[in-house]
Image 1 (cartoon, one colour):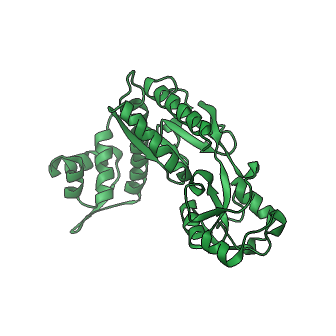
Image 2 (cartoon, rainbow, N blue to C red):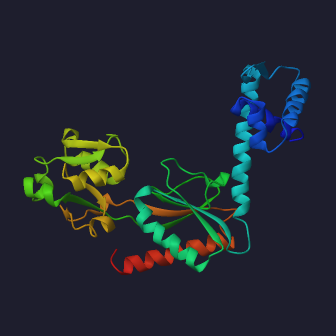
Image 3 (cartoon, rainbow, N blue to C red):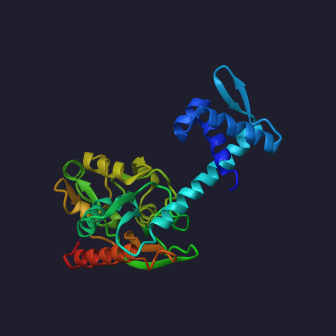
Length: 295
């Protein structure tokens, strides 16, 4: 890290394409940028950039250096996220991640946690990718499916994420309801665009209908919900959503195999910190109250 300032400068020049653009991002004078680039090229014995009237274009060596600098910058940011979670008080950033389907359940829990601990800045991450706790990308993860097995994580069972099979009132008016599982052949469905989806309810659907009956296919569940509401077909919806939506009708009694297990996951380095413990306890208490009320 002895020459990190120079490497970071070169990375920004590669990103921005000009000395002035890099200087603005770094908050330094353009002469400092030029000095860093010249010193780094002299030290490495290669040209990192081609200079031209429009700015700076990285050479092959410059592109290699930029890739290394990007990875280092990412790791430093992730390290900063982990360090921020290590306080003895309940303050600073709290990074929580879950599947997007849980957002309307998790957001009120996070809101009430912030009410208790107003010094906390909540960051709720729901992208499709898995956020890596070991890199400090999240402090607490709520994950679905089989128990996560990444090393150095503390994994605790949280709850079953209850799933139901629903259709819109409009769909039922046009097509009626299936009498039971054996009566599904004459109906249309909303489902995953991935015929090999590992979601338990999607696996169940594959076992009971032809994939040709899935007439609306999408990659994310919010679009599935919209399609079901529009009446194009029957589909799976989180029961807390389905029960609160008067436009939806439950098609069949719920099957336990539809509902994935949820896990609360923390990294061993942060598990005992005050902030993480406070939120995990708050989350578990909220789940108990929800289960006691039948949701």
